[in-house]
Amino acid sequence: MTDQNLGIKAAESLLSSCTSRQVRYQQPAPHGVVDDCFDPASLAAIHEYFPAPGMMKPYPGQKEDYKYRLIAPLSAISLGESHTALFRQPAAEFWNTFQQHLNNPAFSNQLLDAINPGNSAKKKDRHPSLHLKTVLIRDSDGYSTGPHIDPQSRVFTILAYLPERQRLHACGTRLYVPKNPQDQDQFLKNGQDQGWTNFFEVKAIDFVSNRALVLPRTAEAWHGVTPVKGSQGQRKMILIAGIDKNLVDKNQ
Image (cartoon, rainbow, N blue to C red; front, side, top):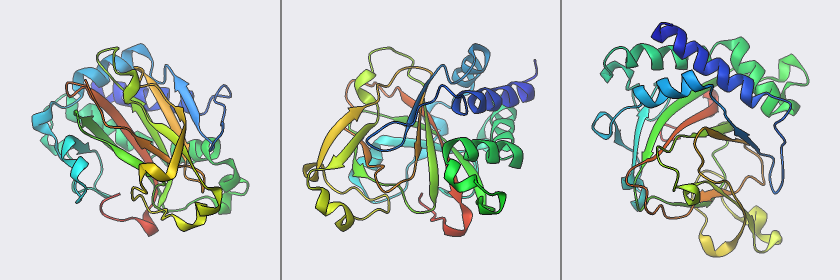
């Protein structure tokens, strides 16, 4: 199988997993946890072609903890130019094909239908400017982000966990609720950390290899990551964000 075909296969494997009827959207906010989100051949290729730290760049922004996050964007809609031009072959072909196939309208609409069914009750209600942004991520010890809700331009997020070691369970995403429900409308819902002391943790999604967290942006989708420890730079994942291009911010 060519690397181009492997990129298509990886995208289709993710689509099949995330649109499966086995995905249950649970409380405290609608979300799905998908195990075996990539087939074995796709997972092997992803690990083989995942960029080394020297091929990535620091995450932009002023937050102190961001210095512990390295990224390689696969599209230029935000976070700067695509990194795929810096990749050597066959990695460049694999990731270019993966990103392009994600943004096939039939593919992205099918994913949107499954994740946000309320938005697709009528075809005209779909986001005509939807773009699936893909970012390859490496977090090292010290990275964290407190409870927050993603910016309004973020329709949904998929986080595909890719640890190379099995001792990183505690490095997964946590879900939260405000300690005082009456404060819900007082917090900013623009991607900014709203402080640990204002929230209760209600669920942890273990950082298990080949697991995906699917999180639609809702008014209850408070999530964060406690300080990463013991990762040895191996908190690897793929972030796929459904972005409304009419509302995008350069650092989202």
